[in-house]
Image 1 (cartoon, rainbow, N blue to C red):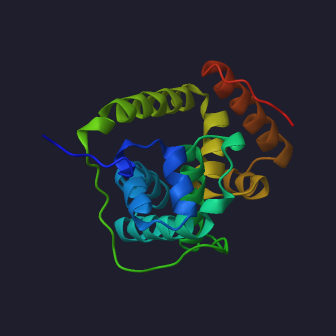
Image 2 (image 1 turned 180 degrees about the vertical axis):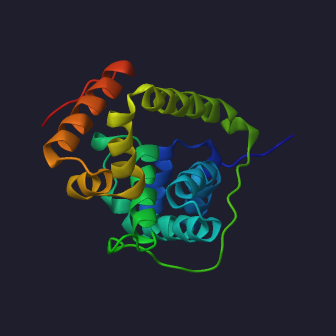
Image 3 (image 1 turned 30 degrees about the vertical axis):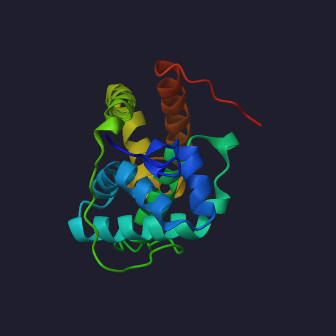
Length: 198
């Protein structure tokens, strides 16, 4: 018979775990890593297209999570959404210089390479759900016309500003702004997500 402790983080929600990370409980950070490292590594690899940089960004992501867990606010989205944004920020800080652009300053702590892992069969349901959502988003993105999809990809995955996108695509700034706006509305509509403006 297995004896599980009520303090074992593997039985807690992401929100409960992030609360424990705020209290600087290393076991909680390990659990968050076990649950989400593979997904975040996939994002980093897609953004950076470089294994070493992706590993460095993943490490920086979890260092940042440890240091900034108190910044998470559940009113602004799920823990996973926050983790994705932290990872994206770390990836942008670790992007190589391109066409005279400079990498964004901020996070980018380095350390030993980490190998993402996913454990615990109890998480399969959540992984399937997240995979389905991710698949829906990627399909909706791929269904956009190239003129709308490309600027959105450059903004999210490359961290480019609208001015940089206009220059890279050799298009007027207003056209880029309009295409991003129309593309995002189409994405949100297709995914049945309502945008709330505060």
